[in-house]
Length: 402
Image (cartoon, rainbow, N blue to C red; front, side, top):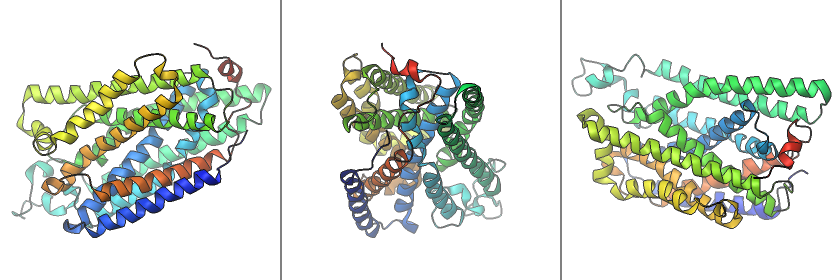
């Protein structure tokens, strides 16, 4: 059965876009930071957050293929729909990074060539200069373009082969399935490296003096949680509209378990990074947390409470993972919690003392991106049957019971 993008859903997504754009414009008018730094920082936050959701969906999709997991076959097309945001998210991110490279904002201090010049006593920074072999624009852009090209090409290829499975049978079906299996394993190798290095490039380099060996995993876990929350909410929405009739409580339970488990992975990495840096008390490491504890303690502990305590307490029981309304409510809270996590990663380093609170600009831009993301994903879901009709493990997925 093909999904129909209803008039009501279109109206809702357009309303979010219009309201978000209006609030964002009011916020931009009130942005008096140098080079509209706050506006650019918000664009980076939302570009990365929503791109991260698509990357998390692509990772989970590949993981299911590489492990030949049967239960998830009935919901794979939903993750394909979420992956449709990848090209748009990549474009928005490239705009932010390109603007930084051209000096239109100063989120990335190392993009200013003067910090590498020892004769420029006013701007020279010996710590940043020591990282020039990695943090230089040509190499940065090579890495960025390779990341995005690999992600988009693999996502397009997976989508193409997934749709081809619907038309095949017999030996051709098996060969195609095994090819997807092998390519998924190959993608996971790329993703294991790129998910870490892109976090260094796009986020950690904002606080150029600081570094953490756990940062890449921490950022990856946030992307994964956000993708799992988005996936389960999308599946529940489709079921409520009468689609995906073969998805049962066991499928929902499994998706709820992934939200629960990935939330604990994020919590473990969040705490581990903090604990190791706090315990060692090395000046160049503690600066990152001191800026956030001293100036943004409410945001810091709110992020940890929402993304750790909420799933731990509310998703612990079996019944909670099978209750659609409850899952949607908890999922929405976790979704916002991880958006706040990206704000915490970006804003203190990008704005310094100019970031005081979350205001109209932040809420407006987030709302606009939610509306645009909904539009792209729901439109993508209309372009193919929601159930992969000839998948070798379809029958096993239909009869999945736990």
